[in-house]
Every structure is written in C-alpha cells, then in structure tokens.
Length: 565
Image (cartoon, rainbow, N blue to C red):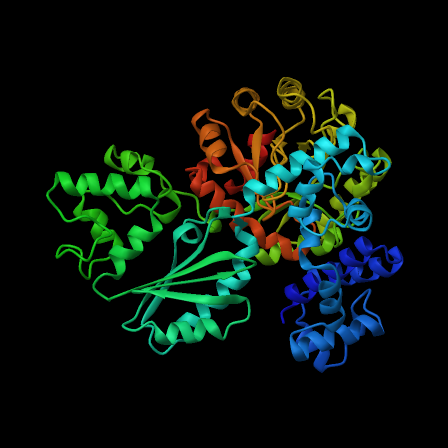
C-alpha cells in the first residue's frame, strides 16, 4: 500500500470511530496519524525497513502495528472489522454539507442511517424531525446537500481516480498483448469531474487484458467483454472501459473517443462536406496509420488539444484562425496563495519557501488566514505583524526566490475585510475570500464580493464560488457582475488548484477571459507537497482557453510587482 492509501485508511478509522460514538481522543489519534502521513515525503516502506515509523509525529505503538500490517498484507484488520460492522457507505454521509462526524454519528446511532439511501429515506419519511436539536433549517440544509450529492453519484473528481487510473495504465502497458495504450475520454480531456475511466489499447486479442484486469485490486467483477470492448468498474461502481483497436485504427479511435459527441459531430460534418469517410467508423483509407494531427490536418484544421474537445467551439475557432496557444504548467513562475503552520498549514514559512524554490518558482506569497477564520487558527493583527517581520527576515536569508508577505483575508458578510486598510497596506499581496455566510442571496453575495473587489488593497479573489467538487456546490453569485468589477479594478480571479476545489470552473474562466479579467492559478497549499498541485489548476485554465498572458503568476517578479502595485 502507498502512503496515500494508508493515510486514507487511518482517516477513515478516525471517522468511523467518531460516528460509532467511540472516545473522541482515540479517534483524534488516528486522524493526527493520517495527517502526518499525508504530508510525509519519505516512503513508509523505507521507514518500516529502518524501524523508524515511530519517528513520525503522532505514530505510537498501536498505529505503528497497523501500518506494518498494511504494508505487509495490504489490509488492516481493525479497519475491516469496523467496515463489516458499520458499512463503508456510512462514510459517504460526511460528504454532505452540514454533516460532520458528530451529526453523522447521531444519524447512525439514533436513526440507523448507514448510507445516502438511508438518509434519503429518513428525510422523505420526516424522521429527522424526531431528533433533538434538528430544526427545519438544518434539515433543509442537509436535504439540499444530499440532493447535490445524488446528482454527483455517477461521477468522480479527477483526483479521486488518479491512483487507480495509474495502476490500470501500468498494468495495461505491461500486458504482453498490448502494443500501446493511452488514456482517453473524460480523463484525457482532464475534466475535473469524470463520468468514466477510459483507455484505448492496440491489441489483437482481449483475453490477456481481461486476465490482467481480473488480477488488479480495485477492479470489481464482473468484467464484461463484448467484441473488442471491455467494461468493468472501480471505486464502488465507477465505470472502467477499455477500447481495443488495430494499429491502423488507433489514432482515429483515439481522436474519436477523446472527443465529446458535439466535437465529433462537427468534425464529421466537415469530413462529409469534403466527401471523406467519417471519423470513428471502421478505419477509412485516408485515416489508416495517420496521427491525430494528420487527421485534423486532412480536415483543414490545426491539431486541437484534448482539453478543448469538450464541444465544437474549438473547431469554429480553428476554422477562423483564433485557436489560442494554451498555458502550460511550466509557464507558472510562482504561487500567490499558500498557508503555513502560523494558521492551518502544516509546515513553517521557511519549509514552504524552500519547497517552492525546489519546484522552480521565482516567488511565493505566504497568505495565512485572517482573524475571523478561528477554525483555521487565523492570525490576529498582532500575529500578522510578527509574520510580516519574519517573512522580511527570511527573504534576506534565502537566495533564488522572493517571498511576498500576504494574507488570505476573509470577506465579511457586508463585503468589508477582516483587517483594517492600514494593516493591509503593509502587505505585498492580499487574497480576499469568502469562508462563511454561504447562504446569502445571489444579490447579497454579489454585492459582498464586489465591495471587496473595490478595496484598493485586494489583488486576488480566492476560490470565487466556494465549491467543493462532488461535495458542495458553489454559493449563489452573479459571476458576470463580479468579473466586470474585477476587470474594472484590475483584480485577479483565482483558479484554485486544490484538487478538491478547482474553483473557478472552466466555463466561468472562459467568460472571465472574454471580459479581460486577469486570472491567477494558485495551489492554496497547506503543506509542502501540495505546492505540486499547480498542474490541476492549469488543466482548468487550459479548458477555459487561457494563454500564458492571461495568468498573473506566469509574470516575471518585476512584471508581477508592477501589475499589483
């Protein structure tokens, strides 16, 4: 098992214990261990071999034993027993807005709610009203959150599928009958929410592939074989599909399976107008052994990258000669939204700076939470003053990277900011974000955000809709009005690259670009390892048609300072 998998098991144990009503201190021990492993740079296998697992903060004898068990067997008996007793689906309750471990525990113990389906039955049967301290407003919030999850059940966030996707890819790549393999479909387009996990392979016989998939942990039976297509499932019923094709058909099939129906229909309209065979059918003479670039070229089009094949708009832009040269991850020169252990981050300022330097950044902004974010250990004005001083000192001690003093300042309900202007004036950069009061009306939320944008010290609006992928929809806000205000005041809107957020979504990014809004791709990193998450944000930026010049933190340090001054 990997570090991530072991961390997830320990976190699940913590949640199950809390739901069960076990001692919260005991549950917290598992949670602390999960957090420590989540940010660990060393491999647990190596630490176990060197008998150094106990050197990890929060790892005692009992948890050490469970880690060793997982490393040696791939299982944890204690976790398996909890799942057998309680059911794994009870953990799904925690994804609902308004349902934490305490509420999930009450639902489990008082109403025997063990799954989302149980919760839906309890809500529809008015049984939540039987619970003490469960008012109509709380029930309505839980119901709304559940309805959102119900619409998302058939989908998975990209980050959640990455590990199994990598495992299946490597297994297919090493299969003796497979000549080549690629991701395709939603995954190749880098959609943030996936409907299926698709692969395309060049092979003559599917038997060996079925055998390989049958032996993989995480791939569920049955594995269905129909002609040259294989279907199975991963992650509790999420569809896995393998498309097997000949060498001659490979590139045409890769193009066809990567494209959405709208994109493919428009391509075939162009092919029909030129009296060419349709793409996606058995390989026509003109497409056999051609690359994707060749196929687009035959239609009179430049190569269209997978991220822009979600609809036909990119084809029209290509025909008009307006296809953008999209931003690359290597274009990012810094990170303007990060956290340290001064608030709710896990590493010191110096550790974050050194890690950013190792990533290759020219600059990093330290933007810990402001005082109203009490749950995130937000900084008081006095502590922020101390932090500014420490940042200035570290800046003189570390060469090769500039450290900017900043803050992620809460936007209060009336649109004012959590720190006075006199303090904000001492900062190099201010990221203003909404962290509470999500229930405001669209008009109220829009006015709230525009007032913050109008503050002369605000440079970036952080995670502008507050969404959490697969867990929480964004709050009601008029993004067109917010974008217009941001453009007028030269305030950047953030593409938050945290894999669980990816906020803004691509369609909103593209609308902002049309309005000449500057955007910023930031990791919102709370640990050194999370500074690598910029690529997730760049995926969104590319699907939103952004070029390098559209993104604030692709600028050189001098250009950045000039832009935000």
